[in-house]
Length: 152
Picture 1 (spheres, rainbow, N blue to C red):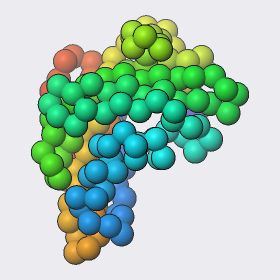
Picture 2 (cartoon, helix red, strand yellow):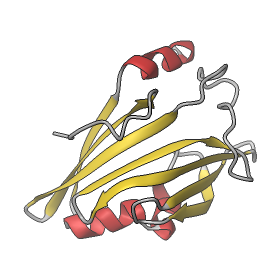
Picture 3 (cartoon, rainbow, N blue to C red):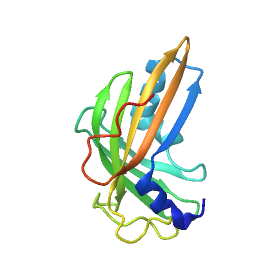
Picture 4 (cartoon, rainbow, N blue to C red):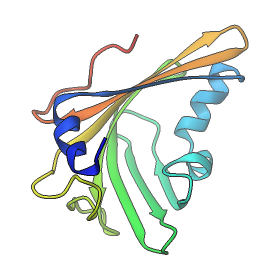
């Protein structure tokens, strides 16, 4: 998909990702919600995450600072909407500046202009023996919805 069509696509659809991890559900949940673990996997592969704050409770604040390959910092801020350890997590994030204020997405993302909605992710963690199936639905919250509904 061309970058210029990403915003249009995000406005009308949700992204669904499913992955199975060879680890117990509680451990996978911790890796998804603890700041010291988020720094190791959040964002694109070529980015580092020197700033990670994640308060794993309803209403908890999220703030992530990612350093791109060119050295520029990119920030996301948000809030945890729902959390049921170790089975479900719903959070919303938006592009931010270093002071946590909402900003437009970076140039070149295809999300510029008046794009000011939050990206809401609903994540489920399902035990599958000693493995864990993670399902993540993400979409744009355009009207204040409380999440994206159940994740299959």
